[in-house]
Length: 342
Image 1 (cartoon, rainbow, N blue to C red):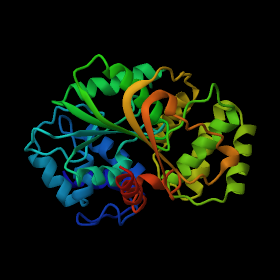
Image 2 (image 1 turned 180 degrees about the vertical axis):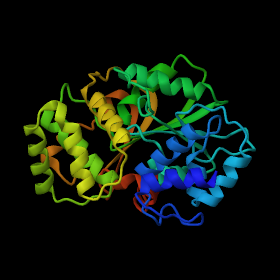
Image 3 (image 1 turned 30 degrees about the vertical axis):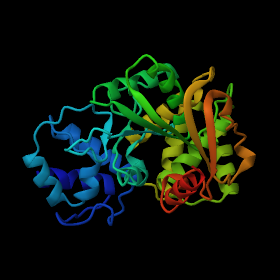
């Protein structure tokens, strides 16, 4: 088991020699690599399901091998990320579900999950369908929402909290509509810098959104002027050549990501950005909108006026950027602001 894990680690981290007691994150592991690590391990060790919480808490090959050798079969959905479900359940337990942005990756929200875990919640993330190998992403928000609800219904949930980030806000809105038919109580809806969809996005807008997202996830720092130039070069490439060009450029800038996984991300993101959806009707639920500090308004002409679509809408302004608001210390700050307003 340790030898197999060492090969997986070595390929992902691009490190030739790895000790069984080396720390995954100290070797350069980040949220995208964590997702790939979990997927590789679960596809290699059949009938076993390593969770995000396992990788974060058991950050060495030795610890992961011991767990896998003693792990019984887990039968939860492969799209469900279990951040901290408690063994002993109280009668008033709230199940919090984090719905990710357009990349569909829920694992990256572990700091956000930890903040709700401290409040006594069970906390889960739901991956977007299409992220895993062999899957094709859904072509409608309605299907994305149904996918999430089916996973929620597979659990013994009575009262839930829905938390979305970015693109996930539209999916959560549709989930609220569909949950009207279910016997599940929604305690709270929280939209983290979520925006209303535009009728259509230009090719340049899609490219800019994707590149900014990937640079952030891969921890690559580029000035805004450099990003604009990057996008201009991409658009000059033939459509069929763009994904390979972007991948090679990100690799050259120090990004660590497996090519097949990157292509799935590219396909999933562009599919999500191409879906048309009209937000209609007013939900009976109250919602909280946490807005981020807009670093670049020029390329972010966004509409965040969700007030016509929820019974009440409380707005909290965060000092963090779009990507920072789901990380500490910004989570603690906007949660404290929200507590003081209630």
